[in-house]
Structures are given as C-alpha cells and as structure tokens.
Length: 329
Image (cartoon, rainbow, N blue to C red; front, side):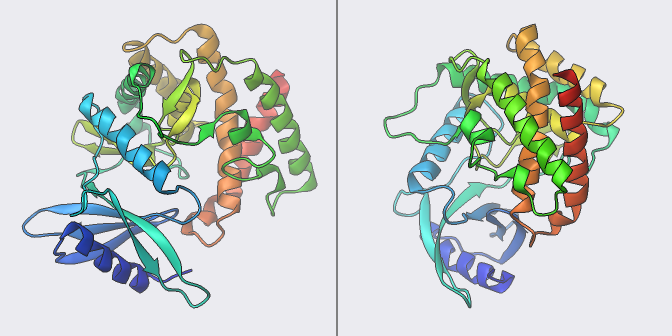
C-alpha cells in the first residue's frame, strides 16, 4: 500500500487540472478512496478523492456526478463536483508504490462544513435519535427524485439486487467465508444467505420499490452542521430496493436500546414525504440482516484498515442478527 506522502504528492499533481493553488493538503481518510482536504486562499477549501482502481470506472464515476448533480438541482443537500480546466470532472494520476504503480481517477467536490453524525462501525449515542426523522425525510426525497428522474443514455451504476447483495460474488465480498469465522458461524451465515435470498426474491423490483439509491446512507455519510444535514459519499450509489436504503440508515443503531425510537422517527420522517406500506416496512428487517452480513464481507477484505479492530464486534453483531432471522423463519 502506498504511504501518505505519496498520496499527498499525487494530490498536488492533480491540483493542476483544476488550476488549484493549495496552501495545504491533508489526507482525511483512506478506507476505500483516498480523501484529501485541499485548503485554498482565505477560508476556501475543497475535497479531493483519489478513487481506488478496479471499483468504479470513468463511466460509473461520470454517472455518479450526473446523479448527484440532479439531486442538488432538485434541492437535496449534497455536495457537487467541480470541473477541471478542460471541462471534465476527473483527471488521472499515477500512484507510485514499491510493488507496482497504479493509475487513479481523481475528482474534486465542494467542501461540507460540520461533522459526521456517527460511524458505520462504532455504536452511536442516543443523541442521534432526534435526527432520524430528518434522515428519513431525506431518504424519501431521494426516492421521489429517483422515480421521476431520467438519466442520459450511457448512465451506468452497479445493482444492489439479490446477486449484488447475496450472490456467489457479492459486491462487498463473500461474508460466509470470512477468515476468522468458526465453522458454526460459516454454516450459520451460509444458511442465512439462503433464507435472505428466498425472502428478497419475493420483493418487487418494479420502479415503485426499486431504483437509484445512495446505498451507503449510514451515519458516517451524513454531515451535521448545527441543524442542517448534508449527504456525502455517493461512491456506492446504484440501483437497489428503497427498503434497503432505509435499513442501511438505521443499521448503526441496531441492537441499541433506542433502536425502536430511531426506527419510529425515521419512518415518521420518511412517510411524511413518501408512503411506505406495511409489507415494505417489514422488509426492512431482512435488509438489516443483509447489511450486517455485508459489513462482515467488506471488513474481512481490508485487514490493513484501522477499522479492522471492530471485526470481532461486527461478526458478533451479524451472528445475533442472523440468529434472530433464523428464529423468525
């Protein structure tokens, strides 16, 4: 893996494409993409993302920009991308590594003030519950926009359908084969996969239930600045069930004593914008288990990340979720 100094060098090279004169470049995170803060003159700053190779190609990245810009045009609180001097949204830079060099696409996005509401891994505070009504309303607004928006020809994003979530090669990894699982856990997770595939196969994939979603709307991707919330990081945006979107948003509070209050607040906000019938609400339960298993698959493939310290907790939480699923089946 390349070191931080190499990422800073590459970010500085990429700044030329936007005619940016950085006063300071800081690596904020390196979980999937490398995310940098670029400080410019005065108080101006932007976010630069150096996208990991092999996940989103240029067509997918340009489609992400198009989708997010359409949300912004519809009044959703999302940060938009800046064009390069040549009118493109991305340039490419070479990342040098001892093992091999790699090309990464780089994009620049408007800076968002505030702090994340929480994290995908660490348990949240009960203080987050009052925000869930607003989160629910935002998720429903994305749904409303999704059902009436028509992308240009060539728009392409991945599908978070049965195969994408629970297929032989899920987008976030084969969770039932995670290295540290016991044989009992492997059997349990594989059995859950079969049960969940059967349950999801009964759900409609018509435009009233399935469409463009953020798909990673956890608390770490929602920035709070006083009373304002802004949705960030559409890297995983694609086609999926709207109930899946709800489950991802609620998942960080799963297992906490305040989870029922968080769910009630979320659905209250959601249904104030878009109706969700009982069948769709009930399907959220299956997607909560799916999300628990997805995180196992995702983190299993990334032992180098600081977040890997949560892996035992993630496995334990998934095991509890699956045991409840099996009991209810």
